Amino acid sequence: MTTNMAERSRTAETGSDIGGDEIIAGNVNKYTVLPAGYSGQPKKGHLVFDACFESGNLGRVDHITEFEYDLFIRPDTCNPRFRVWFNFTVENVKESQRVIFNVVNFSKTKSLYRDGMAPMVKSTSRPKWQRIPSKNVYYYRCPDHRKNYVMSFAFCFDRENDTYQFAYCYPYTYTRLQHYLDNLQRRNMDYFCRELLGLSVQRRQLDLLTITSPEDKTDLENSVMQKKIKIPKLSLNHVEEAGEVTDYGEEDVELRHSKRQDGRKQSEGTHKSIEAVVARLEKQNGMSLSNTSSPEEAFMEASEGMNNMDDAVVPRILYEELLRSYQQQQEEMRHIQQELERTRRQLVQQAKKLKEYGALVSEMKELRDLNRRLQDVLLLRLGSGPAIELEKVKPETIEPEPEVQKTFSEEANTSTYFPAPVPVMDKYILENGKVHLGSGIWVDEEKWHQLQVTQGDSKYTKNLAVMIWGTDVLKNRSVTGVATKKKKDAVPKPPLSPHKLSIVRECLYDRIAQETVDETEIAQRLSKVNKYICEKIMDINKSCKNEERRESAKFNLQ
Image 1 (tube, rainbow, N blue to C red):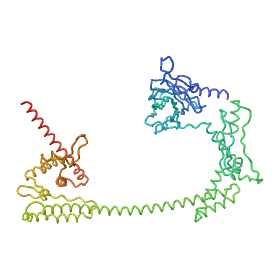
Image 2: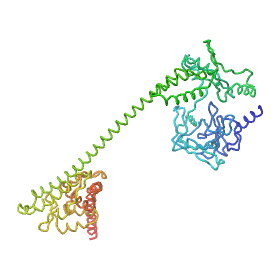
Image 3: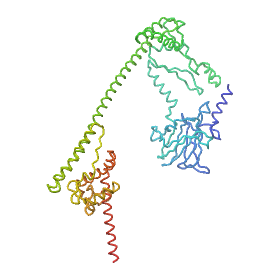
Image 4: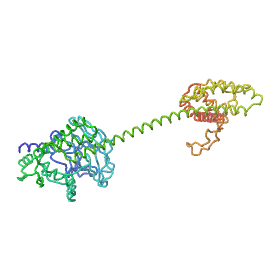
């Protein structure tokens, strides 16, 4: 056995199956990594690695390039094939020095580094652990290292005088654990007990912690002795064998348990395992539940049946705890059902409100469209042309209204309303070779007919703007009247007339309504009216400037 332990220790130290060609005898200790062929004193930027501290692990460092290093970690004790943990420090860095560390001999094929986990880092000026950004961490199988799994991460050193420490995750040392347990033991708490269970191979103590109420503490220790609950892989035989192999001493490590002093005799039937007692209780409960009317009666009958048994005893405290837990679960189930019913009623009310809201929206659209049409009629009556001619126009203007109202009444019951398009030539009034667009605006009839066959919203809007304002007005105006921000010394120009802009939108709306009834598409196309007019103004200004340049060129030639 001594020979086997020596072979396992030697295998762990050499680091076999790690993918390296050299022996890893221990952690690096203030190891300065120099480039190949370099001789002389280390300079700033020649990194110094160290892992000779508690929980540290780094066996070898290879210099690949100025910016890349291969790191080899040491395996676990007595398990040379398990290599995961690393913890080391780096110093003698330069400011803004960028490096890539490759941990080249990981033993795990699956790692949390694939799912966003990242190594930890801290420095002397920033002692709080932080994670490296996951976008700088890569976990992959590398063919250059015997197809082992490699974890690479990039890092930039920002302070020259700092010592940086990198770790697999948050380190928790054995010394820190012992200090914490010593602090708990010094408090002398009734419900906490600490005992020495044994020693590890490296002579570190293994603590047995018992956390329970003071009155149950003695009963728990006695039941452990009586029922002989075995702790896996921890027994006196294993500790004695370890003592023979390592010659750590001849003293035997004992499991100390205080015995009960109440003088009562325990029957042999109470030495059954807890699993057998629970199984017997479940079986008895299954038989009694079929003959009882309530869960409380089922628990009572099961308890009475268990009290009559000589080979199994259920504590009263356990029974009461199970009963309370069952009642709490029933109460929670009732609350959940009530919440579900309340939520269902709220959803029904919300559906009714949404239905009413849809009807109101459709009515609002109808009223808005009707109001717009009535405004056009009023403007025709109060606007241009003599009163005698308006009387002639009156029947033609009011005649479509019954059809519109009929359309509204037919579509009022639907959740969504799309106004029926009115023929363009029926809406606008022709008189003496002129077309009345509304608000006292008249355009030439021939140009108006040419405009109707124009393709595209942009060209239609630009030509209509020229017909309404003219190029001389457009070149000295702007749509909003606000100076552009592209030029520092830009002077704002007078804005275009709002009522004429509304006429342009109305004409474009009537044109689009002939093509589609989708309100979303109509609104989207109407929102580009200002853009089209701005482009037309820019085109006019550009052509004027080009004309001025040509005139000046002719003058210079003359």
